[in-house]
Amino acid sequence: MSALRIGCLWAALLVAGLISNATAGEPSIEYAPLSPTLVSIPQNLLSLMHTEEVQKDLGLSAKQLVEWEQALRVVDTLWWPARILPVPEQRQVIATQEDKFLLEAKRIAGAKSVQRLRQIELQSQGVRILARPEIEAFLRLNSKQSQKLRELFSENDRQAAALAAAKPPADAEKLKTFNDAKAAEPKKALTVLTALQKDRIRNALGTPIDITKLKRIYSFAPELIDSGYWSSADRASLEALRGKVVIVHFYAFQCHNCVANFSHYKRWNETLKKRGVQLIGIQTPETAAEKDPEKVSAAALKEGFQFPVLIDVANKNWDAWGNTMWPTVYVIDKKGYIRFWWQGELNWQGATTDQQIEAIINELVKE
Image 1 (cartoon, rainbow, N blue to C red):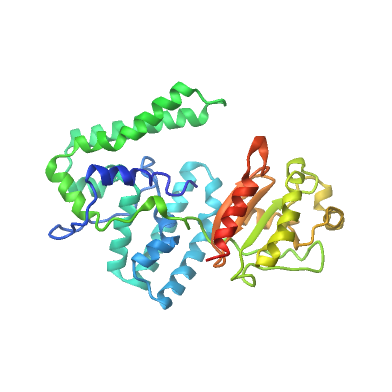
Image 2: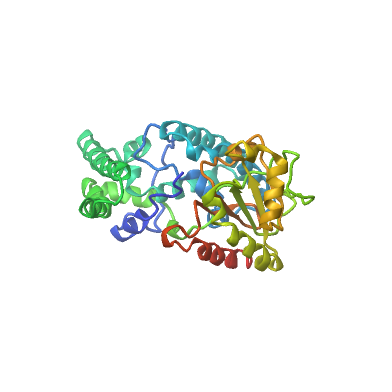
């Protein structure tokens, strides 16, 4: 899942004059569900619906917000773990969950709010909206225009896929070529449109919202699935910890990369607990020994873990969170939203992710 992966194009659209505050006098777009096969268009809707800025823009009341977040929790159970699926499967899951939530959004907030949500979705997708069938119809693009746009997007996507598949280190020349092409995409796409078409889409996009500044773009953290085994008498649930910032880390006690992070976890528990931050470990087995709750508990005691450790003997939490790697660290805000996650060692090859997490937590405790 690459949330709001094309939001940076919004700024280019603004500079190009494709977004303005003018909204009057234009017919509305007949929206259709975003087909999962339209891989050139990012699926940003679920990320947007989690952000505080969008929720405020829609004018949700306190009662509506409660219902809104309840609906999000339902779709999140499939949306969050879908990030590890192959792209075709992932896009199908996301498309299904988007459709489900839009029905709930209309029930909770009304058709006008859904219409505004759709405008924000289009803003987040940048010039890639020009490949959406309903936008093609709204702008009355001719076949030559549509073909030019598809070729432009397909070529840039081909370059991106080639770079992603290449073995490190990255080819500097190819990377520069791709970055240049990506930066030029909005301007090239806009040259395909007539002045009248630019005016129509400008009005249809509605009041701008700065997509690049949205922070809360991930799902609610999945609730812990209690296996009945914990490393000590301490137990925890995310529901009970609502109102606190929480750090959840998945590990296996015989995993070398996991052990490299242990000193950070212990330091955080000592220094951040007094600020209301709760640390929770989830031990998911990788080896035969790690499947033994007694050995897991003994290892946690030996390491000096003074925080709850859930022993995920049947990998149920691993699956619910869509985990793929030991170790993985998640930072969860006071409302239960995932705000940051990191796979691997926190200081791998000079990384300073421990400091990055601490800076994020400093901000979250103030919220």
